[in-house]
View 1 (tube, helix red, strand yellow):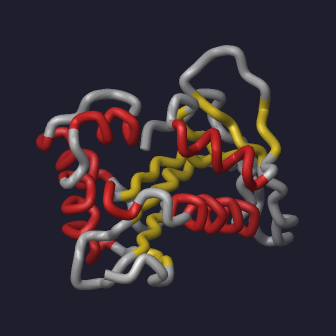
View 2 (cartoon, rainbow, N blue to C red; view 1 turned 90 degrees about the vertical axis):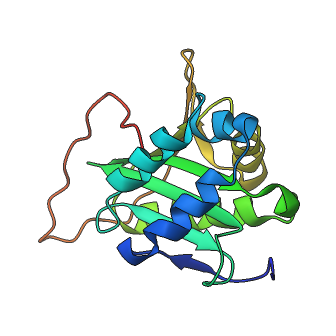
Length: 169
């Protein structure tokens, strides 16, 4: 498999690919991805709830295999909560950075003001620093809030206010 594969936005027809990627994560990787231990049953329930029409789901890897890297931005109002993971053999190849950049660009272009992710996720902290993204200084974990510069909303698309509580994705 080629780690240079382009990132693709996934639709509901890729639900099984998303599931295969997440089930391939070992227990420690699942904690890093979800900020809590996850059983196979809870991962199946999570994937069943993903709204591919509203949310952004990106994958890197050939279409006939589970993604090498996966990002899910759960969207509510003008915020999104990002979860991402990269299969162990492909870590360090820049795939998470590519996904993170694509998510932030999409968020900017779709009127989001912030992207939330797990503050304890070591890759998230490194990527945010490396990309020079603006962060909201917070003193209560577990959220790392990245501020994005959304494109001006179109006159026909009203902006909505997000709930002050992060949305689990």
